[in-house]
Image (cartoon, rainbow, N blue to C red; front, side, top):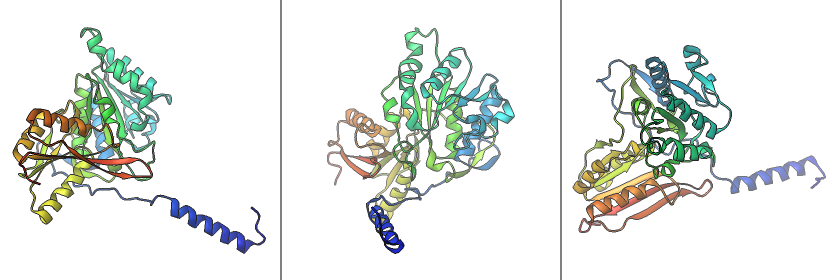
Length: 360
């Protein structure tokens, strides 16, 4: 369309921008939660102020220092990676131990399986968890089943796959996914999601030392926003052990990763506005998950609420609620509330179980 004058053209451009603005999603720069740091640990020695990506770097540094067979590889890891989690490691440990790979996720994981089978420690980085799907066959049919298919003669248990995970502002469809439930169906893997820098370092080192292939999902929205006093020396935090962060008597709240901080806020609101006492549990490990801790808590409180970042169907909360129902047999069918973003189709799912006779 041609316009007769500059003024008319400017008016048309302004009108177009106004129309586009009305049809565009609101721009959100802030996180959907306020990060709440853990207390400074005293049992691991000297601590240092670190954000999440720095705690990951510290864990990787510790791993390479302690294990001469350990190698780190992935897209752009030599210069530090897109989130800087491997910054400085190539200079310190050399190009033979920290090196780039082609842009091929199935190749990255397949290469890691080969390294691990030889007895070395393989630490692979997938640049975003959203890109892990081309490697699905390598992870599910090769890495997870290697020990079983060989009759325990061989395994690739020294393989750890790191991947930035979860919702983030302006992440869109290829940088905001939470794919843990895809892998939770597969025996032979361990899946871990930390809630902050202290947990991230200890859990990552536990994954690297574990005798099973592990997928370590890192909440990328917390890489710089989450800051804690993190121990400098290496330490480990047990896998498959959920943590009760707050005792309560009326309802059990379960989450992992970023949603842990959401339920912490909810617990405060519930206590102040409703007089409801909430027990807070960080699941930490998705596979195999700590059903005993969750069920013990629900037996006490009589109510369970699970929240996580996931699409409407097939989230891991369904597995948790089903397990609790199956063990107890005392609950009404669960109700699901999905609070979604219509532009990105990313949802926060909330599952609620109410015990028979437990009140409204």
